[in-house]
View 1 (cartoon, rainbow, N blue to C red):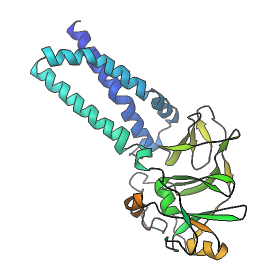
View 2 (tube, helix red, strand yellow; view 1 turned 30 degrees about the vertical axis):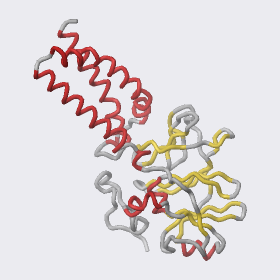
View 3 (cartoon, one colour; view 1 turned 180 degrees about the vertical axis):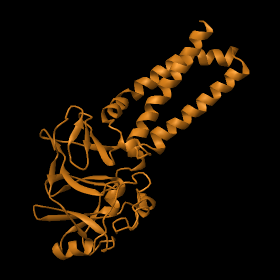
View 4 (cartoon, rainbow, N blue to C red; view 1 turned 120 degrees about the vertical axis):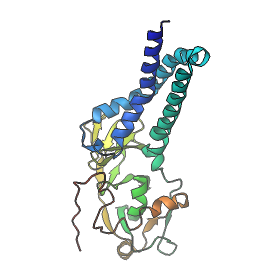
Length: 282
């Protein structure tokens, strides 16, 4: 193999190994400029090719990497070490540090308490859902971290969602084509959370419940009526109601959203979305 071909394989392999995952992480997280791009199709495409692209990259790198290790110059060996370190760092960045479902985990346990046994401060703002005589409250402080809580109210499955970037809280019926779906958090596009159903891998916007790409594109999750009020008001209206309790595993993460449900002169997302403006009321 000529040095030119070997060099080409090395750099093509490096690009395949690194670029798709890095670009997708940029597009799915609120980095400066990323959320303003019309790139939902590109982001979805990248999601599908990351794994095969990494395999192709590793295969292309095998021969030139081995050649550099056994026969290469000091400069080539240093370059190889640098590339390995960069690839490892970017893998941590894309698959751990800035992967939405890793940053914002599902609650490990879903437990509720009545007014008598409740440990949640009654000053917190909650999202409430009522069905079949059963009333449940979900503190925004908790839902905001998880972004979604998959639960049942009475005999009805519910998908309780809250996007902390756009401050939209909606409850959906997770049933699609007659089947209850399980959703995972993908990231964000246009400053709104994007979730993916497990069955078809379609992507849905949290603010509308609409599937924007994938097999289910154009379909809409049914919105379940919900209200937002303080927990104190909830228990006044529903004395026998139940409130979602904190999962102790995420105490630190919940504390990061301390006072999130209170008005703020400067929103926490101002750095990533400087044009966003909240109007203070009350």
